[in-house]
Length: 449
Ligand SMILES: Cc1cc2nc3c(=O)[nH]c(=O)nc-3n(C[C@H](O)[C@H](O)[C@H](O)COP(=O)(O)OP(=O)(O)OC[C@H]3O[C@@H](n4cnc5c(N)ncnc54)[C@H](O)[C@@H]3O)c2cc1C
Ligand SMILES: NC(=O)c1ccc[n+]([C@@H]2O[C@H](COP(=O)([O-])OP(=O)(O)OC[C@H]3O[C@@H](n4cnc5c(N)ncnc54)[C@H](O)[C@@H]3O)[C@@H](O)[C@H]2O)c1
Image (cartoon, rainbow, N blue to C red):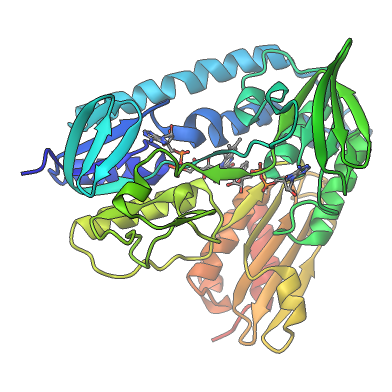
């Protein structure tokens, strides 16, 4: 008999939701973690980031009333804010550990490595299980260039005790733009070196361009079409040099050139588990090619957004499978948000794809900030692009605006549940509110039964 019903390698969202459900269902469960319990999102990602972003969101909103009722903007003390971040975020892993222990989940500390299809080795001890779930996540990609070790990464940024006066970010991806937004609002000189000729290709280009223009106006210097080739020390800081010869001096350099799956030193090759450069290959039941070994979350090779809600959905799905369900995984549409100010959010069919396929889709622009400035805090450039199918059901949306994270959730529900105008008209919503403004404008455009 195996030591456990299920062993999870990694303790992030990809695994702990399943572990909790299985433990509650009386399974014998163990979680192996080599770093901090609860994984990236809780300790070094989403939660820390959004906590630090809070005061920036508020001060940016106040700027929308400059000269029409507000004449000063409060300043932000990053060091104080960082102390507050430690106070709120650090206990989370301790609290999660206590919850796991209370549920009888065994926590095994150390690096897990498969030695056969039912056995994991950790620090010289072996543990067996009927089922193993690999949820080892991703780590920042490291450029193979001279001086790479002089750069820091996202985890370091979210722990910076003081904000550098001059900051260079490598890559104009989600991480870089979110960090640049905070740094520039604190008065730092911010440079972004991006190898491609545009940022965020997965998002609607007009919304991205508006956001880039906003960051540029705030003082961020973008250097597109520039690939970093080396980092060196100078007498007064660090020099980032590109292949084209551009050199920028700053006090700190944060590399944010993508994230790569943690698939090495896991015994995957030894056990015969298929991987590719995007992660572990799984079937439509999230099983690897070894039937009792599943993969979950960011470590899966997939084209879907590698985000916390995706990892959570997969974790819950695996728990369902291990408790008797047999259906293949059926992902709903997945919203993505870039937490700059203004935010950009997107869900479902992308605007550009819809514009290229006019036989099946049509796009409706709703410049809601202009139309309803009183309801959207005078954020006059807030914009919504709605994508409808031939029957006028909502199938996609892109939002540019501070309220995008909550508004995209509302639209995600309307898309997922195939909501018609009749259904919306039968409900009463609170007024005035950001969501009701969108609902009022959307309802006449939606499918009528
Ligand atoms: C800066 C930043 C901001 C982000 N912001 C957002 C956001 O706003 N919204 C959003 O949805 N997503 C965001 N993400 C992405 C989100 O954090 C991930 O999608 C999510 O954490 C994936 O969960 P996971 O469980 O698959 O992986 P992880 O949370 O990375 O967990 C994997 C765990 O496995 C452990 N591990 C790895 N190998 C081993 C081994 N061999 N043995 C034992 N343990 C091992 C690791 O230490 C880690 O704790 C952000 C990520 C970063 C870096
Ligand atoms: N809001 C969110 O949901 C959120 C926030 C942060 C992180 N995340 C997670 O992290 C991932 C994003 O990580 P990221 O921002 O590091 O990656 P990314 O893939 O979004 O962006 C990396 C950028 O670096 C550029 N690049 C690559 N090599 C380069 C080089 N040598 N020189 C200059 N530029 C180079 C790429 O062209 C790309 O634009 C997301 O996919 C998600 O999984 C999500």
